[in-house]
Image 1: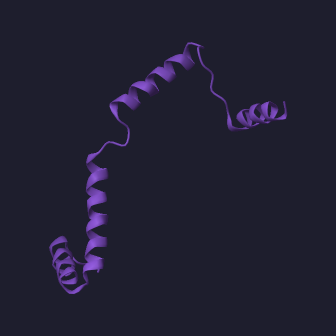
Image 2 (image 1 turned 120 degrees about the horizontal axis):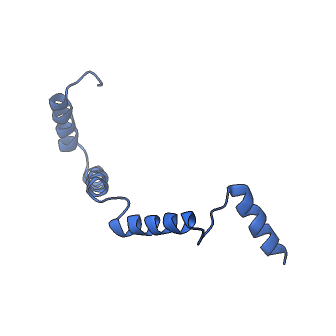
Length: 82
């Protein structure tokens, strides 16, 4: 199957779709729609990017602090013990 060109793959897929039951057609349609949706919708929106930039600026200017995983664990454990 890997040696087929795009046109051959599409023809084979079309044959499969014509022969399968409606439940499988619906499943395939759902997968394809999800693929199209996620390709056209940015994972990170412009609003997300602005928030990331603001957080980075705050970190660089000392207004906020980042923690390593081990530092975060220690911090949470110490607060949990109180």
